[in-house]
Structures are given as structure tokens and as C-alpha cells.
Length: 301
Image (cartoon, rainbow, N blue to C red):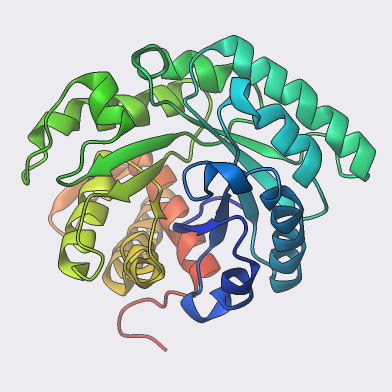
């Protein structure tokens, strides 16, 4: 499943929206039972969410579910919606290791109940409290299911994370760089190699602003984007995939290193710089992603 370039939020009770999601080509979908469902509909939305998981399974799109706060219905959400195609849980307000371990146990139960492979449902912690933000590394390290962590790369909106951290968003976003970088480092140090950036706080039709946030997230180290509007998917899919020029560069680097090895060398001058074995893992990662996403090498069909 990983890496995922894009995860598109859809209200969990909007199954008609799920039916039409193909036209936007997201790599995955987050069915939202938390903020996108009115309080009086949260219980009745659960069977609709389960139905939506089945629809997405038929389309070959991984289905994550943002459940409600763990102490405010999150456990019951999972028990109600778990079905074939349930790929992961986004845990909002993720605060401590105990929540992650409890969630892991509940997921093991529903996997057995539904005949799903043990460990197949991923956990995506979404730290939105000061405690969770400070201890993000420990959250992802608490379960092998945590291959990812959700961080925020935002514009001019003060949401839960801004309130917990105490920053005031600016257009430049410099006040958020420390926290975003910390989330990436905590994710990888804790064993979650695919941190995802939630892009928020732009005008929905300002695709240039979305692109700016996506490029910022990628440069910080996030592997993909969580999105609130379907028109943003194409931007994320483009930004978080290798470019043909990058494919050409890294394919050439691999070839240059292979030629150097054949001559008994472990380092070689390549396009004006010295490269060695330390550059190869990144090169192979890029080439694997290019193959997965169908990105050609520049100048080649």
C-alpha cells in the first residue's frame, strides 16, 4: 500500500460521494466519522461507513477511517465499521501509548471476527494535543501497525494543532516548520517510514496555494498528503511522485555506480559531483516509486 501520494477525506455517511471518487484518482480515501459528520448522525453513519469501505474495496482504493476520539465512541466506531477492505484507522487526538495499544487489540479482534489477515489494518496516529505532539515517536513505536503518522502543514487556519501548540499561522508558515519537521523525524525514528501531511488552510479553489503547501511538505520529508477537497488530489499526486527528470538523474546514478564497481571503484564523479554507496538507497527508492506510479525516464517513452 505504501507509499501513498494522496489521501482524500470524504464524510463517512456520503456513500454517493464515494461512488464518484474514481474521477479524482486518489491513492486512498479517509472516511471521516469525526469532524465531517454532525453529532446527531454519528451512530447512524456507521453502517454507511461500512458500506463505503466495501465500495472502495471494489474500486481497489484503500479505505482508512477517521474514528471519533478514542474515549468518545472511537472503539464502537471500529466494532461497527470493520469489514473487508478496511485498510487503516486514523486516530484523532492521539495522546498516549495506552490508546495505541488498546486500538491495536481491538483491531486484532475485528480482524479475527471478519476473517481478515492479522495485522492487516494500519494505525495512523493524528496527534492534536500537546501531549501527543510531544510524544509522537512513542505513539508510532507502540504498535507495528503504525507505518505512518499524520502531521499538519497548514495555511491561515487555527485548528486543533495550532491551539495545542500555541502558534499563530502566517502565510510564510515559519512558525510551523519545527513541528512539521519533528513529526517527520518522530515518525521515522519510531518505525513509521511514511509520514503524511494534512494540507489545510487554503482557499479550496487556490490550487497554487495547495501546490505550495504540498511542495513544502515534501521538502520537509512527508511522503504524501491528506486532502480535504477532491480537486487537490491531482496536485498531490503530481508533487509526491518522481518527475521524469528525477527518474533520469537517479537511473543514471545507478548506472554510473554500476560502471564504477565493475572497474573496482566505490565512488565516481557523476554530473559534476562525487557519488558513492550512500546515494544508492535514495536512487532505488525513487526508481521503485517511478515504476509504481508509471513515471517514465526523461526523454524516453
